[in-house]
Length: 99
Image 1 (tube, rainbow, N blue to C red):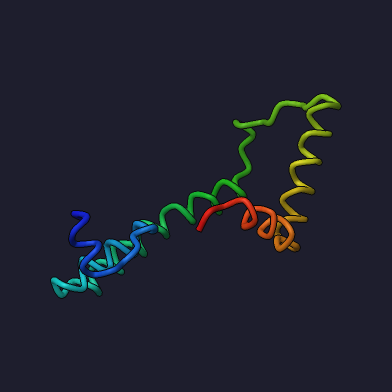
Image 2: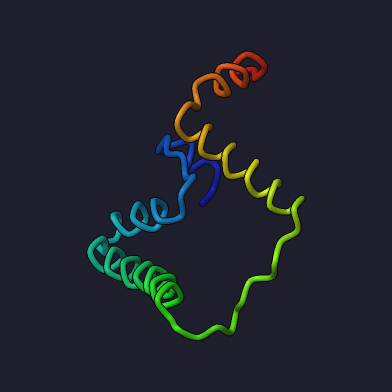
């Protein structure tokens, strides 16, 4: 979509599904586009579920060294802490970003 069209409608197209639904709304295909997006999403979600419950051991994970386990623990704890208490990091970023 052209910049002038984005500017005219004042819409931020950050998410691909939003763009599809927005464009389909002007053509009367909202229901059709939602069904297609649901089928595509269902395919990806079912792939994850079938991988979780499959009994084959084709993709055995390699053993990690001690430093690999430490790195994984640090990253995991960082994600957990930032997911629960993101405010302090947002404040630091907002102080240095020019809005």
